[in-house]
Length: 300
Ligand SMILES: [Cu+2]
Image 1 (cartoon, protein in one colour):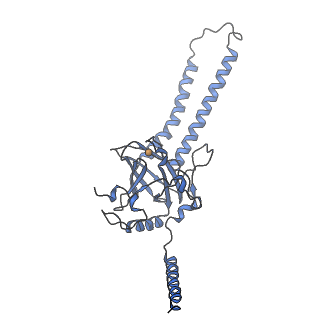
Image 2 (spheres, protein in one colour; image 1 turned 90 degrees about the horizontal axis):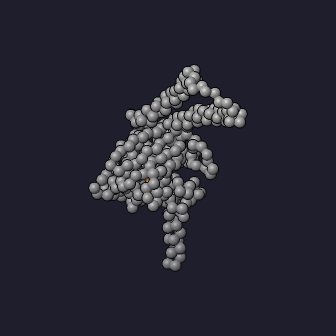
Image 3 (tube, helix red, strand yellow; image 1 turned 180 degrees about the vertical axis):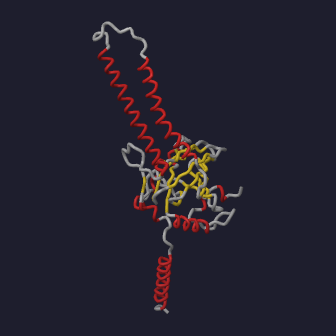
């Protein structure tokens, strides 16, 4: 009898072990794995925009440089002209001033040249404004709601898929998992690459700002109003943003983390997330902890 106990224990341990092995073998691959291959995060002393992760941000970056070069030329030209005038026409160097008050040629030049400069700035600017505003024919739409102080993401095409996204507190940051202090969140926004994604942006309380610098998205989240924006993410990876409208005490604690993965991986993730929801009820089990589920889970 005394010998049988260790034997039974051994058998039990073996059973548990084999169970674990079987689990390990059948565990589905992480649909978000592709997002960790590339991380688009800010760096210390960064002076320029982040590397563009969408065609929109690429165009914003281009326009910024285009205008900057024109502006630099204008500022330098005016500065040189002023220094020349100070030197050549001050009271000492030029005691007897000229009494000329008009010069038609110069007046025409100083109207025509700035007009041409404004035209070559305004044409690409207006093109970009229209490009940014074109939210037609998206592959999918996500309703983004700002709350004090977290974000809520509602996938309009996936019934019940509505969850909240909180910043990981500083003390819980796990650098081995690639988490970044003040930018990583518990439940990131998962999006497919190469597809047009529309954002319907709103707020549940005060003004927030949905700002994704590497994707060229920046819209106020305003209570009672829906502002729209869109993006197409070109490369799988992790992208970050922040609320950039002062929204109260924890304004700094509502970052945005996006996991962009290939479409097939995104669809696999949706299945996992969707399976864990029962429609219009609190999900039985979910990759998203129940206590952090958003308003959709609670009776309306
Ligand atoms: Cu905010």
